[in-house]
Image 1 (cartoon, rainbow, N blue to C red):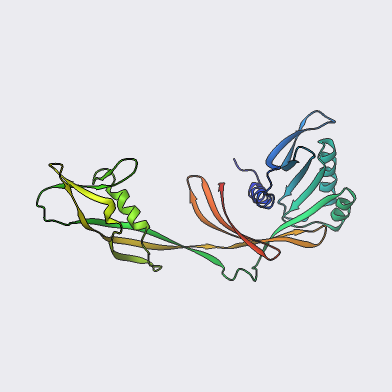
Image 2: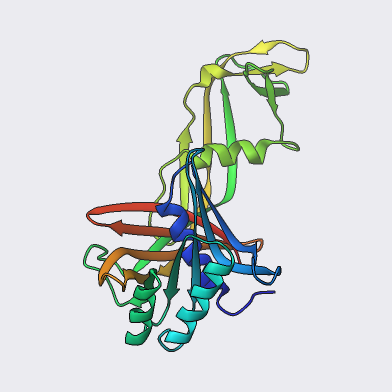
Length: 285
């Protein structure tokens, strides 16, 4: 069952994993650490542990998805938790910014204050949505053209280093036609379109007659129809700022591209300084 703020927490964790691509850094979510004072286990939203064999330190991130700015009491409580659990550095990430008194108290305790807030748009992302073209094969037919005339029944085979494969109507013909379909250029217009393709590399195919005689192929022709649908995924823009230094850490544009089997796939564009990176992010819903 999802908790309030889980989506915000997961988004922050994703951004930190992309920013900390270092083999010596381990990032864990909902990490429990022993409280040295009480002996109880205390939860940190996100824990970054750096250990290169020579030095080791831990950074904890506290995620606050609130409707109002983070206040001084939250900073003081987090400061105490950091000390009691032996964490070297702390960061509070807020979806609604920070009160001035919270920023002053955070500076006193050497805690960084970051904001992750929605933005209207960015000048480097000129489109408001992501268009996804979905192509589905509706029908297909495979015609085999033999070099020599033959009136009897025959079977089609594809040569393979692991063993030749029979293209059988009952077993794998649909899969084979989908493979051919995936390799052709498709239209970017909605609707149903016809296709006719002469299969390349026919030398990789041959036929066998019912008597076991090998029959050479002159050509393979794949015909059929496919349907194109267009889905529209709006971009959501976020600005990731370091409120302690009053500077931008990164700008993010995300669009959901698929929801399937309890998983959500997002395309994420991240701009840091002048560089733009593209990531495919898959999370549980």
